Image (tube, rainbow, N blue to C red; front, side, top):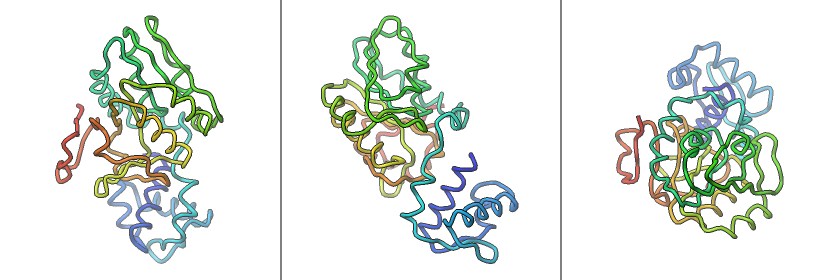
Length: 252
């Protein structure tokens, strides 16, 4: 887990309860006491938490989340890569010649690209990150325009959503910033990102969620969907006590 993802995890835990100990965080994150202490110092210096003896105390959650809900896309490219490859290897079986598909931005959907090269398909994306790595000799690629965010290498905003409305996708492949298995909520890092994902799902005949297990401990400021809205949810592993969801596909 990246340092910034650890910081987000700590903030999420402090949202769920008013305080937490260094000892508990060490056990949950599998890191040393000195690492957690450094993380808490960073959060305190940024005004996100108050440190107390042996732990930390929550501050205003809503004011702190937007800075920590996502890290730059290139920084995440190598994180949990084997898990993401397994997820996308399984999800790729949903794609057939002749399909019009939407590929979401992010470092999980990018792992679908090797499976598209020999397909006769049309691909729509809002991600320059994916576009720069995509090659479909027998297909077509459509890049959506709009307000460009260099942090995520994507376009989004009202004009992007208007372009999405012109398409009727056979299949859409969506990533997420976090998933709450108890509430069944799926999160995006920003409201604009969530609005785009929601618009894409509304224009898709079949929606698929692509996440690795690390997303089950994360959240975001925008709820764009619910687990039961996806035809299939592709994951590398899933908690045994949460398998009441019938649309889970565990990829190995």
